[in-house]
Amino acid sequence: MANREFTVTALYAGGRADVFLAAASGLTRSHVKKLCDEGKVFLNGKETKGKAVLKAGDRVEIGEEERKNLDIAPENIPIDIVYQDEDIAVIDKPQGLTVHAGNGTRGSTLVNALLYHLDSLSGINGVVRPGIVHRIDKNTSGLLVVAKNDAAHLSLSKQIEDKTCKRVYVALLEGVVKEDEGVIETHIARSEKDRTKMAVSTRGRLAVTDYKVLKRYAEYTLTEFSLRTGRTHQIRVHAKYINHPVVGDKEYGYKRDKFHLNGQLLHAKELELTHPRTGERMRFTAPLPAYFADVLKKLR
Image (cartoon, rainbow, N blue to C red):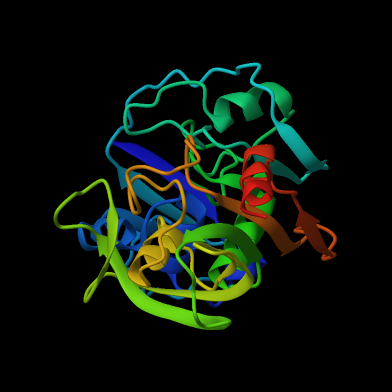
């Protein structure tokens, strides 16, 4: 067994142990619950349960199966660093770049690039996902924030949990969306037909997405999405659910598209957060990538 220990910060004082562990470890709440049920979670050296209330300075320790020893090496992969200081970095991720190793991917990821270009990364998510607070899909482009130390990581995770970290996307959808704006609220779970995909389900976790039409074309709709929750593939699953899948999305939409794209036209265009150290409210934007803008020009 490999034990991992985390110190509770003031942000999580008064909160539950399972909530803190999910944010600090990068594990899912269900995985944390399983560890608690198996007696593998310890508070200040004593076995505890997920509902235990924490104080600042408490030591929470978990035991879990050993990870395979992956060689996560720095790679000189060009990336667009929108902003950087001693605590955070904001990256405009290109389409086609996987965020971290997993599912057969062992190199040429954003993490490999971060290890090369940045002087430090938080260690909370271990050797596989250093610095990674949240993700965007391989074939989705746009903004994500990276933590350069553990204190920043815990603060950013808390903001995402509390829904004070604002993330706005723009997508081109198949078909013409009738409503000018709306809210999509469902539960999302792993698909029973294909375990590599997610699906709207009667079970699973609540997923809420706000949308607003930006422009209608003859056969397409340019749409803005704001996330209230952050479920895997949330926007893509919700777009399919309303029968307007994202253009170029071969997993949740049409297998072919007339524009011969390499992935979905989905871009994380805006990110708003509170700086972990200064408390300053910060807002970042990223322009549409050239291939996305070119499609819109053709539609005009």
